[in-house]
Amino acid sequence: MNSGPGYDGSVAVRGVFGIAWLPNNTPMDVFLELVPSLQLTNSSGFGIDAGIGARYFF
Image 1: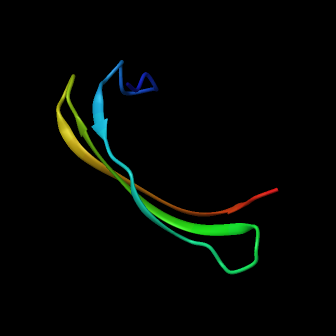
Image 2 (image 1 turned 30 degrees about the horizontal axis):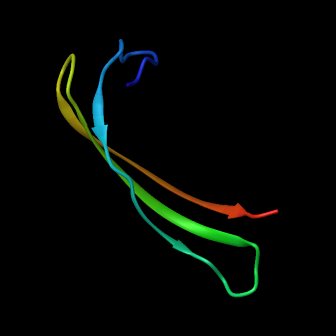
Image 3 (image 1 turned 45 degrees about the vertical axis):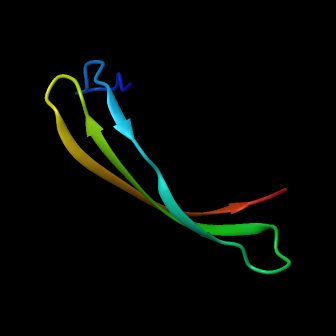
C-alpha cells in the first residue's frame, strides 16, 4: 500500500528480482534489482523500478 503524494492510498502487487555479487574475503556486496508492480486500485497500471547499490557488512 502506498500513501505517498499522488497515490491516495493505492494498492499494488510487487515482486523483487535481483542479483548480488559477493567478492571473496570482503565484508561487502554489490547488487542490481528490478521491481515490477501492478497497481490494483485507483487507476490500474504497470510500473517498474530499478536499483543498483552496494552494502558493507559491519
